Amino acid sequence: MSGSIKVFAPASVANLAVGFDILGLALEKPGDDILVREGKSPGLVITQITGAKNKLPLDVQKNTAGYAAQQLLKHLGETDRPLEMEIHKKMPFGSGLGSSAASAVGGVFAVNEFLKTGLSKSEILRFAVEGEEIADGAYHADNVAPSMLGGIVLIRDNQTLDFKKIHVPQGLYIAIIYPQITLLTRDSRNVLSPMADMATVIKQSGNLAAFIAALYTSDYGLLSRSLQDVLIEPQRADLIPCFYEIKDMALKTGGLGFSISGAGPSMFCVCDNSHLAEEICLKGSMILKNQKIRSSGFVSKINLEGAYRY
Image (cartoon, helix red, strand yellow):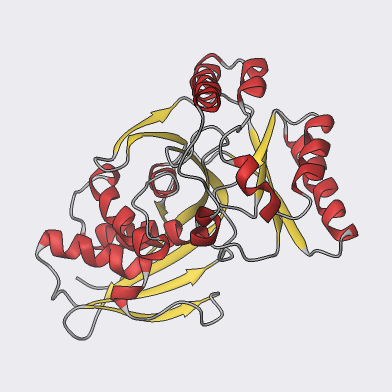
């Protein structure tokens, strides 16, 4: 086998306000490029990492992309196959946009494509989850599954990876506002209480069920009423600068729903048109700029394809 292949694995928005650790969607951008080619010596070797500011290890066992790919190779009995991998990061760390998940997805997907195993995305999903686990210490697929599979994905059970892709109505856009501060998933999880009162659980469950129903029926009014996180957001909001001010602006401007992307600090707003999404991005960035906080923002449709080969 000769030559090389390159794949793209997209960023993602996890939790989606009402689905902590069980719900996520794929973005069209940003994401990671992973290149795989035939190696010169036995085993998988990471030869180059760009865009990571020397923060990621070349050691396959400590790198999410390398580890995920290695788990697939173990499954195939191909750990001695000479392979070289390049990782080109095109998204920030600790942004709440599934950076480690995109790397894990890209790594295993690239090796799977290069070896032409015939395994489907669903069949290699667990290797990507194992890869991301070494980055944040938790086994969950709310970032990994949408990055791999595309669309909006509901995880019924993380341990068995029992998942369902959810219908995506036409016309939805996601506005992302990213305050350029670092907020690691481990740190964001540490502020969460292990307990919740019954009334809060009931309300959150109702919002989750109604949100899924709204997607299948394209009921944007119900979707807007449902996208309210009464469980996790109140515990994490203070970690994110200007969160409530930006949320208030976004909803008053016409956004359907607003919350924290993954563990933060990125924030997302679901909108019914691109112009509205762009306006919310601009206004959010201005709020942060007034507080002397650097930020970036972008608008994306929901990526229905997930990871793909160039």
